[in-house]
Image (cartoon, rainbow, N blue to C red):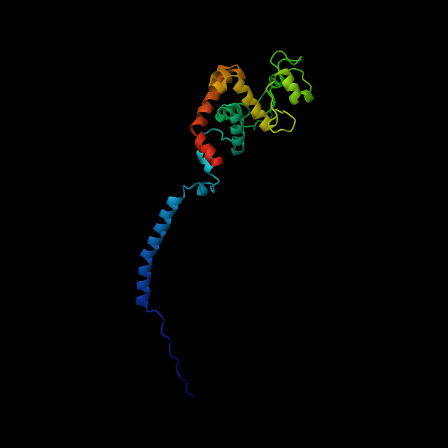
Length: 228
């Protein structure tokens, strides 16, 4: 039998052409990569791009010994605006008093209560008939959070969220109450040291609060930008 030999198909591209195309694509790839890189460098600082990064807030606060929880900043700012004091002062008090509410107990050995560590008599009012000494008092639990009782006895407790209760263990109420106290103690007039000392009669305490206050003030603009 006669078998015809099949003709080999010629390749579409010769070896020389393939090498030429490879050599041509290498510089084109480098140019495209460079353009993409430069474009990204130009847009990466746009707010919409920055907001996509989950680590931005951590980067801003990398030098802090304890970072401010992002969710608290709007509460500080709202309370600060209401009582005409710096929001960073509230953040500093929160840091010193309960390490941003991360303490195992929000009741101190001497009886200070809540996120911002109010003595019951300061929260409800020193004119309450049970108040004396350091201010722990013997105030009934239902009176401790009653805005009408607090108003009656001249306390600093505030019902910030409008639920009918002024609770030092509620974060909003606690921060607004601290803002109220600091404002009335002189912070709204710029008398920060006086206000801080009234909050806790200790020069060391004043120094600690001011240390964190100045830290937060330096980055306040960036912290706000990351939240909003």
